[in-house]
Image (tube, rainbow, N blue to C red; front, top):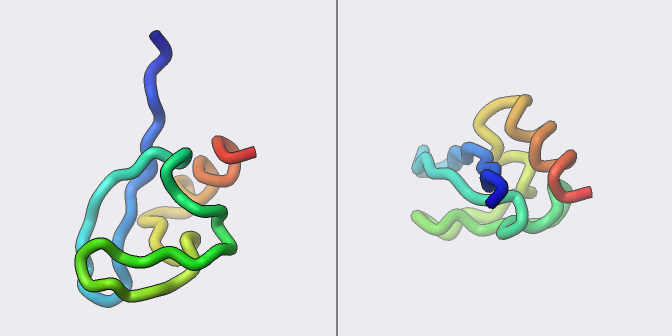
Length: 61
């Protein structure tokens, strides 16, 4: 069974931190709502690091 990859997210508004599978997230340029405070930003703006953003794009292609 292959390991599932996760990316780390951080809400710009409430600073909630969590992990998600890239398969469970919208594309990096689509809107996404924070599960903690419902703030809406592009998915890319929730990525904790540039590496997380790279992984999101790579794993969703």
